[in-house]
Image (cartoon, rainbow, N blue to C red; front, side, top):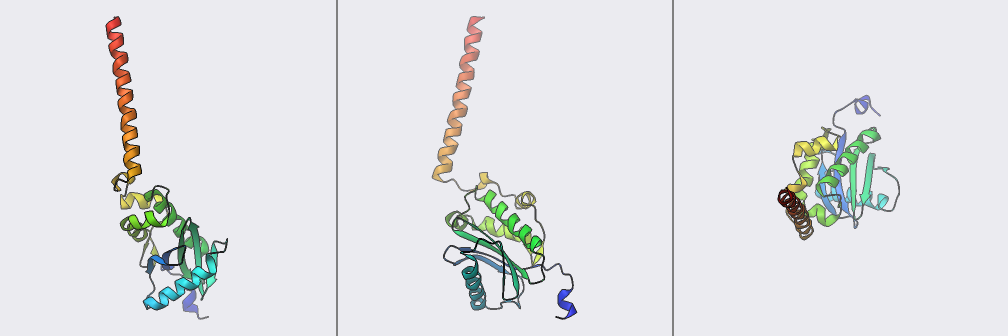
Amino acid sequence: MDSTSLEPSLYTVKAIFILDNDGNRLLSKYYDPELYPSMKEQKNFERNVFNKTHKADNEIAFLEGMTIVYKSSIDLFFYVVGSAQENELMLMSVLNCMFESLSHILRKNVERRCLLDNMEGVFLVVDEIIDGGVILESDPQQVLQKVNYRADENPLTEQSVAQHLTEKLALTTNVLQSAKEQIKWSILK
């Protein structure tokens, strides 16, 4: 190995991608244009990574000279790829930050359908964590604050409408109960 490949670099992340439980790409960003320059090469790499990791219980894999950290949730697989010399803990902090941030955005419902429904937020999160392969942030709270993406801004679903109505009904019931008490005490005086 030559000495230039061991030089420290800010460009720690080579790629980041999310696959579904069939190995299909939902999101991918490659930060090293020389690594896999064509879409065909990227998908082939992703297929190889998925085949090696989808049944394993590990968190780290080494494939094609790359260090890959990954995590799965219901029907999704999250991957962060770095060079063979990259610190696995740094890559894992990026992965955990991405997963925790997305978990918050998706209201702890980290699954394919919800991810696809909120892709704009997913891209914002990824762009806040990594820029051009450089890790910008590894704290999920900071990422969410920078993205300024709150659960209240998400489009309403049937479940969130029902929850909202239930909360409003409970609040109205409390207000009415309080008003009854005040009227009762004012009459008794």
